[in-house]
Every structure is written in C-alpha cells, then in structure tokens.
Length: 387
Image (cartoon, rainbow, N blue to C red; front, side, top):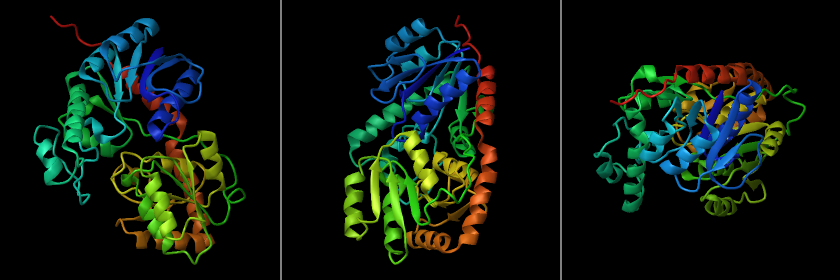
C-alpha cells in the first residue's frame, strides 16, 4: 500500500508529533508498505522514502499535485490544513491523526486561565470566552487567527469517510464533545522502541532529564522552582528541547542560583536524546496542561527510568503512580521537589519503579502501534460520489 503522510516536518522538530511521522514511515516500510511524507518546514535529517515539500500551508493545488505524483492508496493527515486543502487531501481513503486539541479548540488546551477544563464545543461563542475565561492569546488578532484555523481544521467532521485517530482516550473525549461519531474514532496509543539494557549500570546516580519544548504550558519553570528547593542535595539537570521561553528560563536558572547545575541542550537528535535517557536517573515531566498523550513518559519507560510527573489528560493513561512513576496531583513546585528528593534518596524505591517502568512499557510496543494503525487504515473508505 502506498501511504502519504502530511506533516509539519519530515524530521524530529520541537515535539513528538513530527518524530512519530518519521518513525511511522519506518514501521510501515518494515511491513512492506511504501510511505512518503509531504511537509512544510524545511531542514532536518534525510529519510529513505519520497519527500514532497509544500511551500504553502495546506493549499489545495499543491496537495493535489503531490497526490498526482505519488498516487497514494491512503493519506494520513498529521497537521492542520485549510478547508480546501483538507478536501483535496481527503479525495480518497483518508485518516486524520489528532495529536492535540487544536483540532477542536482555538485556545489550544481546552482550559481556562486557572487550568480548569473546558468542555464547550468549538463555535462562535469561543471568541469572547478567550477573554472572559483567559483561554486565548492576549493579542485579539491572534485569537481570531487561531479561531479561523480551528474552524478550518474541524472541517474533518464534514468528511464522514475519513477515520480519526487519537493516541489517548482524553483526546477521544474531546472529539466526542465536538459531535464526532464514536464509530469514526480509532484509539492508537503511541509507542517507544524497547531498550534492552540493565536499568542501573548506565545511569548516573544524580542526573535528572527533562525533555520538553520550552513553552509555558510545559512547566519547565515550575521544575526549576522545584529544583531550587532541593539545592542541598546532589543532582544535576539536563533540559533537552527548545522554544521561545528558553531565554527566560535561562535567566530564571541564573536567578535561582542553578546555572552551574542546569544545562540547556537545545533541540537534539533522537539518537542523542536516547543517550541522555540511558544516562539519566530520573525523568521529569512537569507539564501544567492536561497533556494529549505525553510521549516522554513512554520513552522513559522504554529505558526503565522512573518519572516524576504532574497528572492529568492523556498522561494518566501511562502514568502509573507508585508502579513506574510518582504522580503529583497539584501543580505545586514544593510537591514536585519532595518527589524528586524522595527518589534520589531511596534506592530501593528507585529500583522498584525502574522495574515497573520496564514492565509497563510492554503496553506501548511498536508492533501494537502499527497493528492498530493498519487496522484503522483498513476501516477508511473512499468518499461517496456526489450526485
């Protein structure tokens, strides 16, 4: 089967979704399929399958041209397109992978300024709510642009032949609240390749790893505030990722007296990140929003690394408190600091959670992921002919 994946990028860039696209292509190719990627963002590593660069964000003529050249049997959409672009992409059997809530929420996270979940379906009423409950941007121009973008993306509801794929029940629930028929939605949890290594021999006793985009919702600033509370303990922290908040976070680390113990790596390759997972003792996941999935947690489990994390959203579907992780309910830096200190000081607890992490990773194997994905593709149908 010839499968075209439409994505922001054809390389690992600022988060898990683009990495999922690249690695999905490898899994499809291993099963005898012929994948290709159509993408917008230049740069990144080369891959072994056809690439089609899109110069405009989801324009129908560009997408139609790619479809004519590659002639896919299946199209899988991973990123927002214009309404016309989505119609062009969905001219045959189609699947749409909703990695986050921007498909149904112009505020992005479906929560107010106090992080209270919002269950309102997308509509005109969302525009004033961006100000009333603080779920949008401060600039009204951006709120209008985001609202228009989501209004175009939610056009998937008008494509009844297209399958909708989600990585968590949390995102599935958001689609249901936006009037999507449940029989159109396929649950396809993400995965991480298993790492068959001893859990203790490669770790550095006091190394903390925080893989994250550097944006406020990811809570890196809360992690730094937590680390300041345990300055008397022996630890060092590596932050892997980039984003517009990086200068402010570096200044915060300096202000808190942590500059010599916290290292910002920036964006790194998957192989480099794998090396840091192997060296780490504990993985930090201080995300403040309800996370759509949280691939970091599954990657940590693959390496047998306990996670200290705030709960909520899709993360609760892999985050097993006192089995493979320490789950903190309140978004409190003091509680986050206490959990890190507890793990650093209790080797018996660390061993038990590390072993539990490896055991739970069996639920998130690549074979199960690709089986579910192919089953979802098989349910996709060509669009009905219009009279």
